[in-house]
Image (cartoon, rainbow, N blue to C red; front, side, top):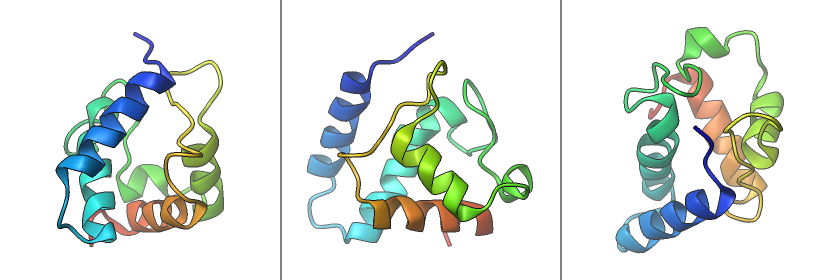
Length: 103
């Protein structure tokens, strides 16, 4: 099943609007748990998308993960999030996924 970038953008916007009053880090945690979790599993153990648990990410550095978050993976359901989240936020997500999300 393929998801469009527009679908993910709408979901992201709904998450951000629905998270009024939360800090930016709380919003990012919600984004990962809800939006990323829709493919990677609500516990991030995997589903349509691969596991995002630290053991599964051990062989990938934070820079690689940041690029995947920002640019997606062509030919897969992983959409690009560039333009929807900042490179700094993508890096924060990548680093926290490697350590166990959320901290």
